[in-house]
Length: 227
Ligand code: CA
Picture 1: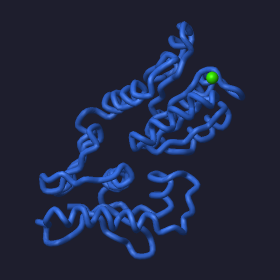
Picture 2: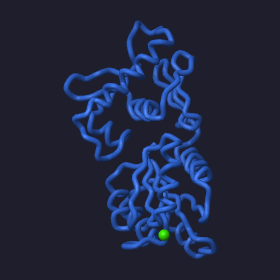
Picture 3: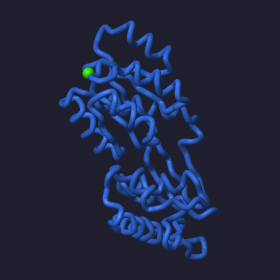
Picture 4: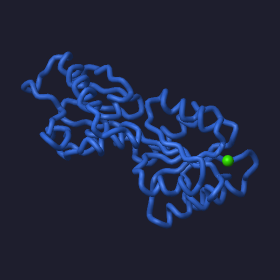
């Protein structure tokens, strides 16, 4: 899960980002509308949390620009109390939900999860490829029916690969989506994480001819094995 937060109030941004991290979301933060629009246009996010009152370019203008450019990433607006006109305009411009300040980060996370359920449909929240099953809402992974105890990062990585079985992802693509955007691509952090996932799956007892669901593609990256 990759979330973009566009919010200029540092205090709010800090507690929201901390909450996202705790939840296992990968998040990026912009503190003005110009950068926010830029990142939203290029960053391949699952959800955008967008404040309305922003320096540079206000949230409604960012939203309008994104929708006009055909960007359909789900957007949750953050509004000040009593900004009824803004909420109505936001929804009519294509926002998917809004949350009035002040709010609890737990509520924002619950709204994001509800929104993703709505947008992608209940079925897509359960991914099944071969013997591996993944639930995006409960964040549970099972292999041959047994729970695999993964960290948040390991979950995000396997989810990312699992969305497109058979497709090869480069290390840079994986880093951008599962780790922070500007992580050093020469690091072996992905390989270490993949090894840990493989070990955890293998420790359950392998039923499918000893093959790991994640294949290494020499010199390129990794792919999720097609069943
Ligand atoms: Ca603001």
